[in-house]
Image (cartoon, rainbow, N blue to C red):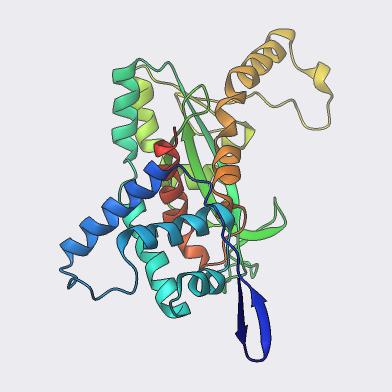
Amino acid sequence: MSVTTRGFTLVTYSATLDVPRHIVEFLARHLAAHRRSIATPKGSRALGPFRQAVLVLRWFRERGCVHCLARDAGISQATSYRYLHEGIDVLAGQAPDLHEVLANCHNEGIARVVLDGTLIASDRLAGVRENGNDLWFSQKHKAFGGNIQFLSAPDGTPLWVSAVEPGSTPDITAARLHALPALYKAAAEGLPTLADKGYQGAGIGVHTPIKRPTGQGEGALHVDTRMYNALLRHVRALGERTAAELKERWRTLKYVTLSPSRIGDIARAALVLNRQWK
């Protein structure tokens, strides 16, 4: 089938959204409930809940441009942005609280949790630190974006995602703001946290590798210390795949084109969608 517009003949085609139908229906139900909660008049929307859910999931799954999504749905770009942000908010509102997650871990007999951080790359956002550097620029990754903290089960299952901090924020600082107080309490109750070297000095209950002295080789560490580090890396490895799993399945997390301040909500929304994937 072809369509003629502005003197050009365009070819249309059908595509398949590679997301299980029950996830689309899950989001559509929550969008419909949201519309009822804000008393949206029946028939006043350009898209129904199901088609809006498809638009939102395409953005998460395909990293599609909003203009293209709007064109395919037959709506304006402004409406498409509004529907996308609404979908993100509805999903993020279903994300679990950290205290709830830790309580569930205790109830399910999970032996430990893994804390890790990642940079969600994004367009540049205005903002300057006290030292004059860009607030949203990560020197570690040499890219603009937002710092997100993840908590996962020992098998790598994503459990919790934090709010976003500017990319210049170190992992340990972001963890102190969003995770450590709750993790201390959990550790006191028998649920320790494993983390990498970036969290050294996090506090009691957060286990990190022991660094070797500056300028010295691996042999500077006692054999027992090296074995401790190796064992810690081994048991932490699966848990640290959380960020990679979310980014590969929900590809919009590889590079967010919306405001970086929305990265936390987008990551929490991706977490909710990931929990529905079976």
